[in-house]
Length: 302
Ligand SMILES: NC(=O)c1ccc[n+]([C@@H]2O[C@H](COP(=O)([O-])OP(=O)(O)OC[C@H]3O[C@@H](n4cnc5c(N)ncnc54)[C@H](OP(=O)(O)O)[C@@H]3O)[C@@H](O)[C@H]2O)c1
Image 1 (cartoon, rainbow, N blue to C red):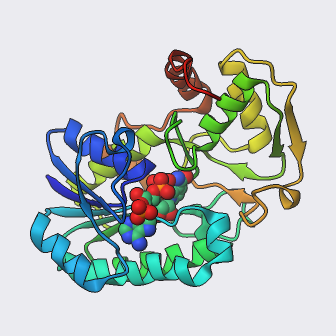
Image 2: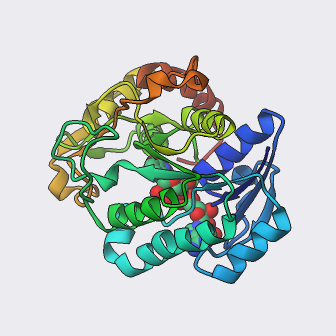
């Protein structure tokens, strides 16, 4: 498979790496060339999805078998402050990509923020009601791409891994670095996630693309837990002191515009044979695996 990956960030780089690991080719694209670590040696092309012409040209030049749509903005707080820009990148960007894809399969990585978070966890058949501007923009992208009939919208919960070079390192990385440095961490105990390891998102994405799946699918991790509980589980797995992990209300935290329950489960995944053996890892198992990588990373400033 030759995939055009739209977005060269944390998820785009990992999904591109998975395509390559399985013998395919991946070309990453974004407005700016990613740093060496995130690009992981993959080909890269410049693209701004807001330009219909640029979308058509890159598909013509790269001639992909499939597109993976995984571009930003991914900062939920920034999207809340800049809703028009969020809609331009995700909503109008999806229209441009749908036209440029011209019938090719498209995988969109979407989000639990398309739900208001009133239920403890949401499945594919649950009614959407975006929690914020980011959720509204991603829902617009879903609808446009699903209307083509050749797209899969894979809604994924909060993604984590070891990513110290990221523009906004994810929650696991931020916690691990703060705990190692003995810094205090203020995290909500009333904001719930089903965190999912980035490698599991990449494994599902490529398996589903190769199987030609379309429609909607949810991917959440196997556990529903608050950020506060998760931070303490990370400390335990990394054998670090957790006394600096302090609980704060979500409304007074950096997560104020997130849904109370940013949690997903699937009614459909168990029926898909290509996902056999790709069950998402739990947070303790992942933390132990990631702790070895984090521990080896001793020279980095925290
Ligand atoms: N990370 C999560 O927990 C999570 C969970 C659910 C869904 N998602 C979805 O996954 C996607 C990617 O997430 P991520 O964590 O990988 O984000 P990220 O690390 O912030 O990467 C976003 C990428 O998109 C590019 N981009 C932004 N605006 C663009 C534009 N107008 N045209 C082309 N490329 C553009 C960025 O590069 P430039 O700025 O240089 O263009 C960057 O390469 C987002 O759509 C997000 O909604 C993420």
